[in-house]
Amino acid sequence: MGERDGGLAKVLTQAGVPYLALSFLARISPSMLPLGIMLYGFDQLGAFGPAGVIVAFNALGNAVGGPPFGAAADRFGQRVVGVVSAGLTTAGLAALLVAMRPGASVPVLAAFSFVTGFGNPRVSAIARGRWSAFARQRADRARTASLAMSYEGAADEASFVIGPVLVTLLTAIHPAAGLVVALLLGLVPPLLFAMHPTALGPGRSHTAVEGEPVGVPWLRLVPVAIVTTCLGLFFGTASTGYAASMEAVGRAELTGLVYGAMGVGSAFSSLAAARLPMRFTQRSRLVVFAAALFLLAPLMYVASSPLALGAVALATGLALGPVLIGSFAIAESVTPLAQISTVMSALSTAITVGVAAGSSIAGPVVDRSGAAHSLLLPGAAAALCLVAALVNVGVRRIRR
Image (cartoon, rainbow, N blue to C red):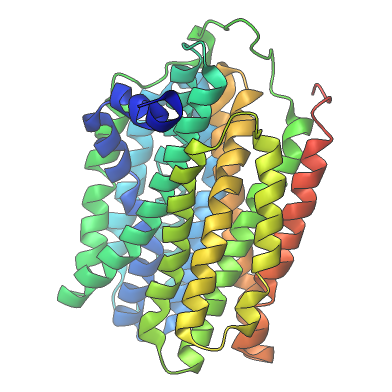
C-alpha cells in the first residue's frame, strides 16, 4: 500500500489503539450534556424554557473557559490543567444533578451548569496539540499534521453523533441516567487522558524546532477564527431549523437522525480529506469546500420532506469536514508548540460561541417567521465562511 493510501492508517498505528480509544472516550461527555441537561431539566422542571436557559449557561461556560484553559495548559502543562478541569466539570455536573428538582432555583441551576461547561477538559483541542508535537518530530510534518487533523475532525463529528443518541437511549431508561453516565465519562477518561505519557509539559520546556515561528501571528489567524465561528453559526442555525422543521411536519422524532446525517457526512469527508494530495493546500481546500457549502446550504430551504432535508444535511456535512480540518491545520502550521494549546482552544471556543449565537438567532426567527425561514440562516453563515476563507488566502504574508 502506497503512502497516499496508508498514510492515515500508519499515523494512527503509531499513536496506538489505547491512546486513540482513550482520547475518543474522553470527548463523549461534552457531546451528551446539551441534550442530556435539556431532557432532565424538562423532566424535573416541567418546561423547556428554564431547561433551555440552563443549557445556554453550559455553552456560555464553555465559551468563557476556553481561552484561559488553553493558556493555563501552555503555562503549567496539560497534565495538571487536565486533572483540575476534569474535577471541576464533574463537581459542577454532580451539583446540577443533585439540585435539579421541581421548584429548584433556575439561577442556581444555571450557575452549576456554567461551572460544568467552564471546566470542560477540551480534549479535542489538547489532542490536536499533542498531534502537533508528534508531527514536528517528522520530516513530513505538514502531511502528518494534515492527516492528524483529518482524524481529529472525524473523531469530533463521531462523538457529536454518538453522544446525543447515547443520552437519548439512557434517558428512556431513567430521566437521570444520561447525565449520570455523562458524569462518569467526564471524569475517568479525561483524567486518564490528562495523565497519558503524550501530555505536553509547560510551554517553556519545549525546544523550538527549525523553522518554527517565534510567536503566534494573531492577525493571520483572525480569518481562520472567523471561519470556525461561522461553522459554529452554521451548526447552531441548522440544528434549530431542523428541530423546528421536523416539529412542523409532526416528525420531531426524526430530528436526531436528520442532524446526525450532517455529522456522518462531515466525519466521512474528514477521513476522505486525508487522501487529498498535499499540493491541494489547506488554504485552497478552505475556499473550495466553503464555496461548496455556500452552494449547498440554500437547498435546506427548498427541501420538502424529512428525507430530502436529511439528504441535504448529509451533503452539507461532506463540505463541512474539510473546512473544519483546514482551519485547525492552518492554525497549527503557524503556531509555536509552546502556545499550541492556547490556539487550539481558541478555535474550539470560536465554534462553541458560533453554535450558541446561531441557536439564539434561529430561535426567534422560528417564532416570528416559521421553521422554513430559519433554514435560510445556514446559508448566510456559509456566505460569511466563504468570505473569511477568501480573506485567509491573502493574509499569509502578515507576520503577526
